[in-house]
Length: 372
Image: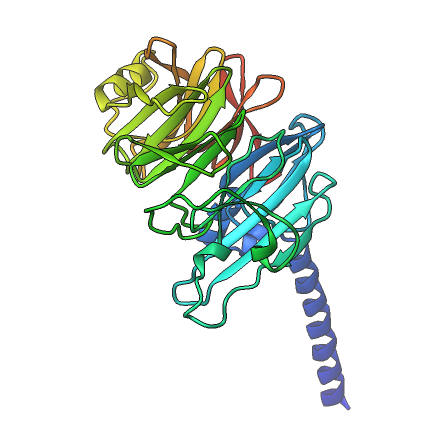
């Protein structure tokens, strides 16, 4: 009898302990059980988007976070759309394209009409026969302005108007593919960047910028400096292209009058010039490397974000290139780096890296982190 009692006591204790541990697990934040790479991915901002009355942040895991009070508070949204773009002023489109490596290819298109609360998603049909071309069905990059209808560049450099139908061959095509280019590797490893602005379309790839003034029917090519990555943006009567190689190898800003393809150098981010700008106030020590990552043209000039001294000592900085090409530092540095730069409708600058920052009083103030 005593033995049975001891067994019952032990069983009861085990149940109580299990309940306590279970309650403890439930009280822990999910991030506590993430691997270091997962935690970094959750904290890493890859897009900041502005809609009417809402700001969206997307991280490396494609988690979406929304703020309806100018960044003072945030909440997570349910879906995980990829490579987002604002179209028609307040619509959201997303795209994914990947030719595969150790796994098979994949492609899909997303759409939200309610600022990211709910999404429609369609898997794009891909060829089952390897003899059929794959790249015409893989999205590569959105190139439209936020107020314009969505315009998507496919991996074969054909411009299309995306639709929520699986057969991308039925999507409306604009003009013809840009000739002579190797296919892009989808949205994840895209080798293309572009912009449609006031009837002109620019696409950067393979060390050149291509221009069409007739919706892709004909294309003109202008060689520029070789680059690994590029970003094209326009403002007022000018367009700008940030051309980036790896780290401090070479990074430069070129510009052309809108509606032309006459690109000329605006500035080169050589290490000596950048180092002088970043250390002028005495807050930072020697700068050994700088890699540009993103840019925003404004009335004041072109703001450029980048990573300083990539590696364990990396930090992020923003530079301003004025109309004369002079470079100055903007605000203090932030930890680890910056690779997103945007301007809100009210003119405020936002930057993204390991978290999101807003420029206030000349300093970068944290407005979103993985703990939000």
